[in-house]
Structures are given as structure tokens and as C-alpha cells.
Image (cartoon, rainbow, N blue to C red; front, side, top):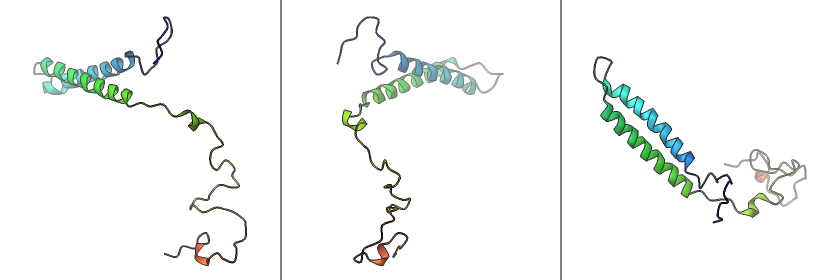
Amino acid sequence: MAHQKPGEPRNLRTSVKGPLMFSAFWAVLAFFAVLIFASGGSSRAPRFDLAFTGAGIAFIVTLVIAAMLSMSHKDNADHLGKGSGVNLSSKKSSGHGGYSARSEPQGPGVAPDSAPGGDSR
């Protein structure tokens, strides 16, 4: 892994700011959701203990998920972005049903049920 020079922007994969902000957002959302719904109405005291517990759980779970997703990231091989590809010409592309839409006449050795649209099921 290459070392980062001072003043250079950090890679998204190596930066911790993104996953921390993502986890903090869900923790705050969970805090207010649990604070509102666990209280059971405006006549009762708010349940801050449950709200902090829910926020902590949401923060840890989303941080672990973000870490696992960043660890499982793998760049594509260089050869996948190069080459001519498949079916670049519309004349040679296969039709919707999987058979080729060629205007060539069928040879004498071709069975009649193998023609396009000739499903023998």
C-alpha cells in the first residue's frame, strides 16, 4: 500500500470520516426515534436510558457493517476495462429470445424445429 503524502486527499477506502459520519447519522436518528416511541406519550417522562442504548447499538452496528463492506471491496482487474467487448455491432447482436437475428438462409442440414420461433416443447 502506498504511503500518503501530506496535503494529499485521502482515499475513500482508507478514510474513517465517511463511515463515522454515516454511523453517527443513524445513531442520532435512532436516539430520537427511541426517545419518542419508548416514552409512550407526552404525559410520561422521556426514556433517555433507552434512547442512549439504542443510539449506541445503532452506531456500533452501522460502523461494523461499513467496516465489513470496506474490507470486502476489491478493485476490478485491469483487463476488464479494455478490449472490444461483446455484441458491439447491432447487426450481429442476438435477438430477444437468444437466437441470432441473421438474414442468412438456413442450410439443408438445419432441422425445422431449430428455427427461430420454432419451439418444439
